[in-house]
Amino acid sequence: MKAVIQRVSRAEVTVGDETVGRVGAGLLVLLGVHESDTEKQATLLAEKTAHLRIFCDAEDKMNLSVQDIGGDILVVSNFTLCADTKKGNRPSFIHAMEPVKADELYRFYCEELLRLGICRVEKGRFRAEMNVSLVNDGPITVVLDTDTWCRHE
Image 1 (cartoon, rainbow, N blue to C red):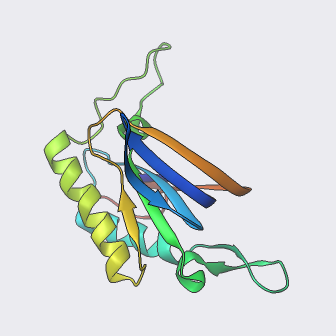
Image 2: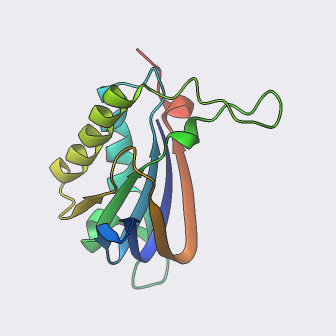
Image 3: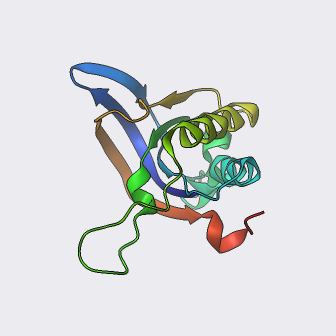
């Protein structure tokens, strides 16, 4: 799984004219699900997301997590994070998980965030054409990739 995590002061996702997810201070997570990802990886990624210390403490040092500040998380599925760009200029998405299973793992990741004590987890709409707007606070953007720190089973 791959997550692009942005510290935000606010973010929202719309489908057409409908706002389907909106958060205040916290994180925007763009989540890509690879064909070989598992629930174990989703759990590990949720734990890393919830505990990632990218918020400033009283001394202006990044020592606090979204969990510590009681922040919100907006999770938007983004299969394009699984793009293979090794050949040519047109990305290939053959390694993205098939949609039904990817949606299940995406929802599982969101449920894990709630289980870890994140008070509010908002979602985009899976497989929809979405518009995401945000105010990136910092800007702070971190990429987490389970391939770099855990093995596929």
